Figure 1 (cartoon, rainbow, N blue to C red):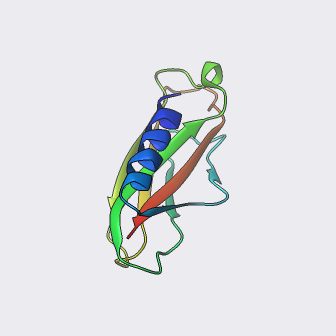
Figure 2: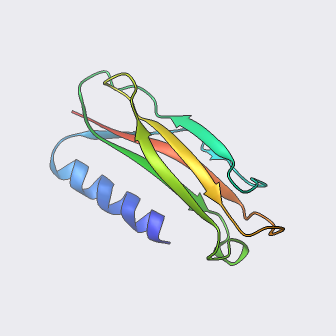
Figure 3: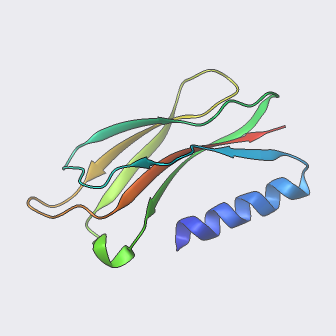
Length: 109
């Protein structure tokens, strides 16, 4: 739910400033990830300058994603007009991973 609200507010803010957003499509499935699994995800490139970069994780069914499961996300160095994200998964030993998906977001001028 929090990711959806963030995306909504991000889009609303962008619309007010005349910019556009580009998202990883389709999102990268991280269902079944094991502890310390690492993923890199790229956004589409902007045709114009990139104003902002962000990494986004989403659980399709929050009841299947226990609170102990979480992702560390970081925007990684990449070309100036796109976003490259690195995600590292953390969970308790033996826990079944929820239906996570990962994406990168870039705001284009």
